[in-house]
Length: 428
Image 1 (tube, rainbow, N blue to C red):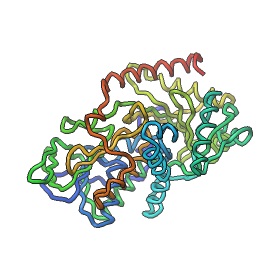
Image 2 (spheres, one colour):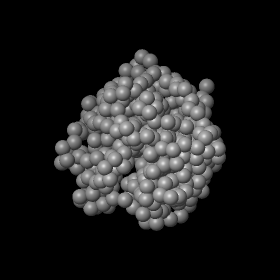
Image 3 (cartoon, rainbow, N blue to C red):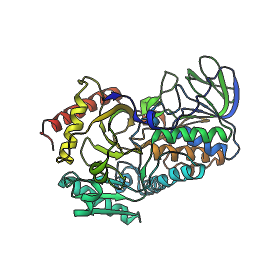
Image 4 (cartoon, helix red, strand yellow):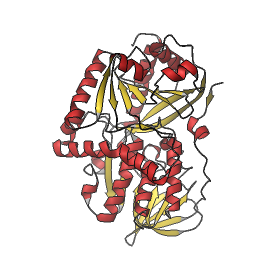
């Protein structure tokens, strides 16, 4: 029976809950948000002996970090040459290089600390669903090979083998990348952080952030943390009126559905090398297998104003499109998450006041971008060197997205029409 529950909450190793902040405390760095960015920063600071306190408003991984697809991807949605146009060649190349090494940073943390993240590093596949998508694959391949990246174009029988479908005739395989259980990864990061001396508090929502006598007071309903530096690592799950961080992006939802574990021909055929994958559709479809051989399908879009069966119908349509000869899957779990989005697909790095750092709008690349930015923030705090950050700082004013709420609404309406068109076979 299909139930609305995040698969990762069922399959990730359990961790003990953390206490709520109930008494005032003092620290060197206070981190707000217990996701990839916050925990990566905490680990890299604690490794150097810095005292760190981390506040999470709900529980570790309850935001986007525990609900994502689990693709450990490199780069951004934008192609490298497009980043150079948007940022200038020097800054564009710097960002491309940094995010190119981000998957290795993730897998290194997993290996170094023995995190049970159910990770695979077999590469991920960008599948071209039509002629325009095939042209995009060729362009990305040329730009990445020019930069020495280990990628290859899959065609013919090799493409059919890797994708598990004859509906895709060309795809880009990026050998740097892979998959993991996102909640298991973020829970593992929290465990590592505490072992290094980081103090984590859950169910400790920040109400105000105030500066007095050169130090910051991070206040929750029951107590406060006094700190020299603050990292705001809440991104698309920022809550409350104490910060304007949420004005630097607009919200986009993401839906996922998971089948029962596959066996026999299904397990042997669909993504047999356990690669993660996504296609070149305007409203992309993502594909992957989990640790127990379930098939996960995902796409951009939320639940607003849709019948409960809407996405299940979409998933059945996608299955029929890519795997027309296979019996209909039995779906077990479905869930939604949110991510911060920008028109140019480039995240933002801000220093809104002296002693405060934040990054927002990872555009669906949170595992790698968040882990990288956590380390970069730690390096910047430790050295004072701004070159530790792979993007120029933006001011809050120039980062604000105009009419962000309307953009979210219009995006959702457009996605709904696109998915309806897929189901009605108007869009192929």
